[in-house]
Image (cartoon, rainbow, N blue to C red; front, side, top):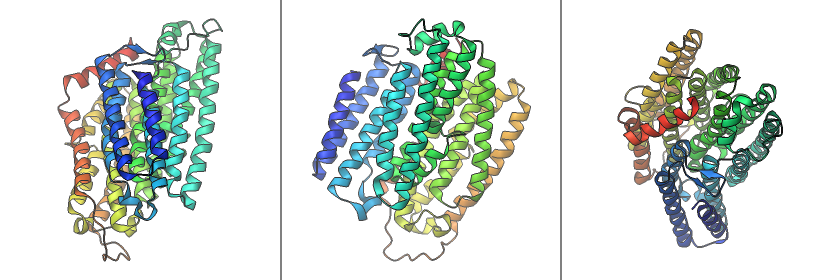
Length: 475
């Protein structure tokens, strides 16, 4: 089934690139979404089964692919031309949808890959497709963002490749055919600690470009800012999840080796630095897409604090990652409506949103409550578990520092969001204003509602999947 999914996706992407008919274009996109849904169902039905040698439907793969499929539906079905009306052409449309299909296919394959090198290959494919989507507008800003993304991500992928080579040295060259994650976990207690530490440092650093952590978080900021809103919604959620998957699978190997305490310290330091950097930039940012991008760095820092703390922190980290994906993608989609209304992303050029788009403004207010982890946001539950984990681990310094930084972030986000909602914009002419599509705003509400549902009333199957991931880490 995996090979059928990969081949089908590539063929559909090729057809989208070549096609110039709008109706056929929409039909191909719907066929791809059906294929994506069917493959997700296949992973659920055949849980923990290997497929095509290099892929496996474990709990982590199911959770990440399910999240991706749900977000991909509104991201692909939202009207293409509501943001890019001035640049609409059959060629641009075909390239946009073709790149989106390849991007989603690579993410899915990266989640389900059971071999460390196969994960690396599909992460590389996401870099190429992300670059095409970032370049889509073809202006000076998008060109700069594209080259910056390619440069930083290429370095990061070299880091990961060196890490894989070092990992083979840690195996003492005895099991060169055993680079499957399951094999590496079994061999973990016998791996050379020195080479394993080096391998972890390189792989961890490399994947921070996708996850959005210090030191390579810069790659994603410009890409999220310059890419079309539906693509930014995917970059800020499911692409970051791929970086998390790469790091977590390596972390599970080290958790079964003698260096896990050292690894936890590295992760905690990096996570705290990431939250600190996000706080500093959020204080001065004036672009709403960049504001949300830095907010994502803060959320990924919280996720990694949960991993570095352990205990119930593992559960909190996975839950936080999934809920963040839904709320942040819905926010980026709504930013597309903001841009359509005000033709600007600068916070001082947009405002009084309640007057021009009441459903969108209500959503923005609720989404602010969501990312701020204020009840009834589902993120309140994941962050409550995280605080509990820090208390149980007696990480008082980390807890106090995080609470201080989160308070500053809450104030900054609140100040900007309330300005957008209630304060009249500077130099804005309301004539010929374009309003957002009501059906698209409905999808934003549904994604946001999902965070409340999964946070407060999670279905037992969802809980079992998260617990299965936690079990794979600790046993």
